[in-house]
Image (cartoon, helix red, strand yellow):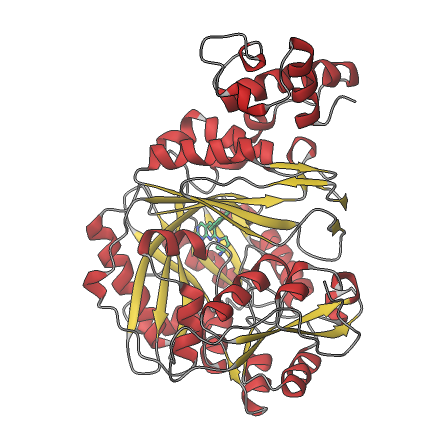
Length: 539
Ligand code: MV4
C-alpha cells in the first residue's frame, strides 16, 4: 500500500481502460467526501473507466477511500470545518489533479448552493442539481409556495412565515389543533414545536423562533396542521439535461429516532401500485418546478387515510439510495455521473417497476442499550456478512480508528430478497454473520428490530421506534450477568449459525460431516474453544 503524501496526488490503484468507449464521460472525477459514500462513488467511477480523486483530512490519511481512489489530495486538519467543508480547497484539489467534475456525496458540501456555484464558476461540473434548484428547495416556505403552484399537495398550513402569535392563532383556529410550528429555514426537524391548544401558542412560537434563530440565523416560523402517526415515505427522482424526469419509486423511512433514520426499505407495505404512480407523478412535478436535474428525493408524509403531503426535497444522493438500486436495478451513482456528463436517460417510466424487497440497516458506532451513546476506539476485528442477496456499503476495515470528528455511521448493510418476509429473514441472518470488535455498534439493535413482531408486520410509522425502543433494547444487566450471558450467547450464536447444537459441531452426531469441515473441532473441549474464539470472550 502506498501512503498518500500531504497535499500531493498519488496513484495507488491500477486503472484499466474503460470496458467500452462511452461518450460523453469525464476522464477524472473528484469525490468530495469520506467513508462509505466516498467508496460508493469511487466504485461507480471505476466501473465507468473514470479515474477518481479522493480528498482527505489528517484523521483520514489511512482511510479506505484514500487508498481505493486513483489519487488523493490532503485538504486539512480533522475537523470538517477545516477540511471536508472547505469548498475552496476541494475545488483547488480538482483543478490541481485535472478532474473535470466533483461528486459531493451526501452531507458536507452536497446541498450548499454556494458550493455548486463555486464548482460551476471554476469551469467544473457539479455532480448534482443546478445551484438554482438547491436554492429553490432550500427555504421550506419558498419550496411550499413553488410546489403548491405546481399542483403538489402540501400539509394544510401557511405558505409564508407568520408575523406574530395573533396571526398564528388565527390560522391554527382555521386548521384545528394540534398544529406544528416549523422554521422556514429549517428541515430535518430543527425548530419544530407541536402546539396542542391555543393557550400554549404564544410561548411555543417564542421558543420555536429562538431555536430557529440559533440553528439557522433566521427566526421565520410558519404553521402547519400536525399530522398524527403518519409514515415517512420518500420518492427517488432522476432527471437528465434533455427534459426527462423519472420517478424510481418509494422508500419507507419511518424507522427513525430523533430524525436520524435507522432502517429503510423499498418498496413500502403502505404503497399500492396506484399510490406509487400518484406519488411518483407528484414528485416529478415538484422536481420539474424546481428546474431539477440529476438524482433527488421528495419527502412525503403518508397519513393513516392514505393521503400524502409533500414535506421537502433533498437535493442530493441519499444515504438510503441502495434500496432503490436493488429493487429497480438502476445504478443511481452511475447515472448521476452519466447525466452530469450530458447523457440521456434511456429508461421509460412504465419500465420502472419495483421487483422484490430491499432493506437497509445503518450500522453506526452507537450503543443502543445506553441511549445510543457514541462509541469510539479501534476496529480490532471485522467479519463481514456475505452470501445471497447481501450488500455491504462500508467505510471501515480492521484497524480503522473511530473518533468523534465525523458521523457515527460506519456502514450500511443492505439485503434483497423476493418478498419482505424473506428480506427480513435475510437481514437477520446477515446481521448474525456481522462481527465488529473494538467498538460498540448498532448491530444488536437491528437484530432486535428484525425479530420484532410489529416491524415484521410492517406496522411502522414515524413515532414507532421511539415508542418501541424500551422493549427493543431492554435493561442493562449487571457485570456478572454480562459474563454469564456472554457464555450463553456464544452457545446460542453457534446454534444460530449452524442450526445444530454445540455438541453436534464437535462431530459426534450423524449429520456432523459438515461440522468436520471446521477441521480442528474434534473434542467437546475444542468445540467450546472454537465458540470462545469466535466470540472473543475466551482465551
Ligand atoms: C410534520 C409532521 C407532522 N405533521 N409535519 C420532521 C422533519 C421534517 N422533514 C418534517 N417533519 C415532520 N413534519 C406535519 N404537518 C411530522 C414530522 C416528523 C417526521 C417526519 C418525517 C420523518 C420523521 C419524523 C419524525 C418526527 C416528526
